[in-house]
Length: 310
Image (cartoon, rainbow, N blue to C red; front, side, top):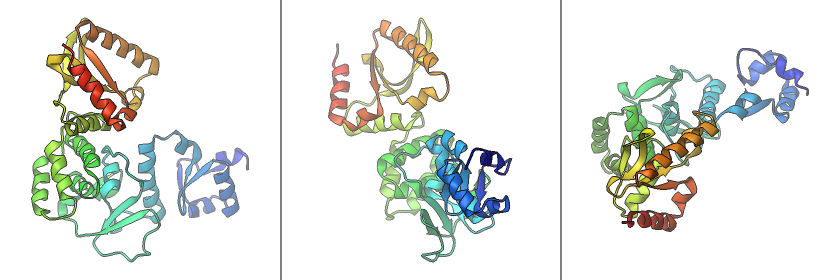
């Protein structure tokens, strides 16, 4: 199979059902060859995406693409009785998820049969209220508030806190969430939901920042201020977390936080100027990477050492 076949794929789209490829002249053998050559990627049974498109996508975009593949492959529409829910709805809402699998979650009114959905699909049965269903990316999914509640009932506390922080940034109605908490008294997972709602902070800008904050709380270290602004000779700079009185700044260095939005060299240069200006004012910097969050004793000693400086 040569690259000429890539040019012969149907134009104007990148996602196909097997029947659509068959109609375009590709039989099972040709499709298999395209998959082996990386020109097509099989997302699920009967649904394929152009290989170059898949390779260029970020992980979170791929997760949404798998939902689109489910919808495309099963001809799901807003009138088809299925509503995307739980972590699938969270992805359609563009909410942060951490350490969550790519299973597709759907909710429908009637209890599905054990064989009515393909592998990788989790079906939930419940009656959704009038305001519980909206459209996102052209698909029926649960509302922001309903999505947050459903997710927190199935996720652990740290996963729930990351989701809740981001939902608050998105403008989720906290009062509605508290109402739903009251109605769910006694349900499995409601304690994680309440705890996440109690401790959430819309000022956290990334999952890494949320996990830093959660770890500081769990280690019983004095909580820092979030998104602290400091004037320097290089202008006003904003710090992720800071103990202002001690002039100690804690920054989470997730590459995605910076490098998805500007060239790497430019970002590094700006960060060096910023840090140098703050250090000239007596600030100490703690730069935290993902791996540091899972070496808790070392993390604790670094923070306490910085805070103990006169």
